[in-house]
Amino acid sequence: MNECVEESKVRERKKQSKENSMQNAAANDSADHGNDLDHPIAWKKHIEDMKVELLDQFKGHLSELLDRAAEESIESYSHYKQVTKSQESGHRNSELFENPHIKTIYHMFIALFIVFVVSTMAVEFIDEGRLILDFDMLVYAFGKFPRVFVTWICLFLYTLTVPYKALDMWGSSYQLARYPRLATLALGLVLVVGQVCVLGIYPIYAVIHYQLPPASRFIVILEQLRLAMKSYSYIRENVPKVWKAKRSQGEVLQMPAFSCYLYFLFCPTLVYRDSYPRTPKIRWKYVALNFAQVLGCLFYLYFILVRLCIPVFTNMSKQPFSTKTLVLSIFNATLPGIFILLLFFYSFLHCWLNAFAEMLRFGDRMFYKDWWNSTSFANYYRTWNVVVHDWLYNYTYTDLVWILGKRFRVAAMLSVFILSAVVHEYVLTLCLGYFYPVMFCLFAILGVFFNFIFNDSRTGPGWNIMMWVFLFIGQGIQVCLYCQEWYAQIHCPVTERHFWALVTPRSWYCRPEA
Image (cartoon, one colour):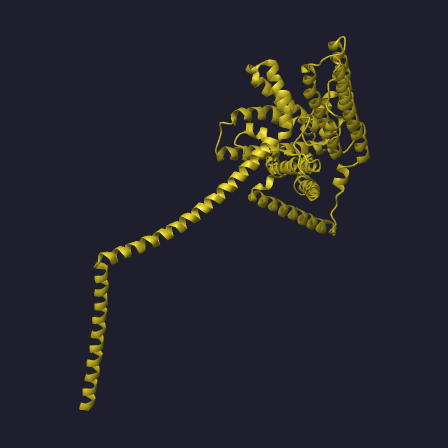
């Protein structure tokens, strides 16, 4: 027992002595290191090592920052040179999908289109016991297409030959004629008569006489306006050149080449120029994609009418009129109304015009701007349809300001609004087959009012929201009232064909039979 106690005591003394020796060694090492740092040479070497290490780290970070800044500046400069070169060459672009968020909205519209198709098939299966979609309405809307084609050929051939040849003859002989003003007046009267008869009266006669369906009427009337505006632009741009030309004896003035005029008739612009910026090649896949999307938008419009409009307005004219029914119908029509607006914008101003621009290698593709971000109706009118806006600005507003003077700019602007409202109402009247000036009132009255109230001084997201609210309501009013009148024309046919019976909206007095 005593031996065990003694052995344990011995082990504890050895352990304690070992710990003491380790502490003494550590203390000696720290003392030696402190003594080394206390020496000036050792301390200076230690500071230099720290300085070199810090400089290496700083140089590494600085080099990385400078490399990143250089890459960004090179990319920015390249983009700036590309944009500058594009602007100098006349290339403008209104590509819709440069923002990836717009692409997401596009996908949402495709998903909604699929929902419309599925819901229509479900209704067809429940009501008819079949899953086959019926497109009789589309077939009816685009009916009598051979007659449409013949009418378009007549309009196109006249526009291709008569205005060009008349201007060429007048320009070549203007300075050689004995009485140039009399010759100008005579040729001008002949050309005006031809324009009125062929581009003015003939399309109206074809639409009414052959009883073309609505979509076919739209094709004829819109082509009538397009060719009339293009021929006017061609004459308006070249007549001043002839007047200002100074020729020596026997020199013949060079008029625009026929190929330039032919190209102008097909390219997606209404303002004539002798040359336009051109792209290097044609992307045929891009052309096919745009035409396919136009076709898809037509089917989209069909499903909107079948699911959201026809069920609501078919029997509405048979019911007693009430303010509550009218107001509810207007607000129910806001959704299909804004869909129709967006479909027209995307199918025509984006897909159709870009497809023709790509086929013709037309470089100036500023067909619209970011009208959806507008905070004023003044900016919305300028950016919604740049193609038509450029024509109105160059040949209506600018010419009126030149004739009336700069003091009458407001009168010139009001004249542009009235002209645009009249043309819009003219198109709808002929295409729908009845006179109901809803578009004219919204455009010429409320449009002018909002143009002054919601002007360019209005900024901020709140004004953009207000603009969209009024767009929704305006589209709802148009869809509701035009659909009501369409079915009123069917349910209450006119008995006496006199002037007031033709211009008075049928929906105002069409009531269900007792």
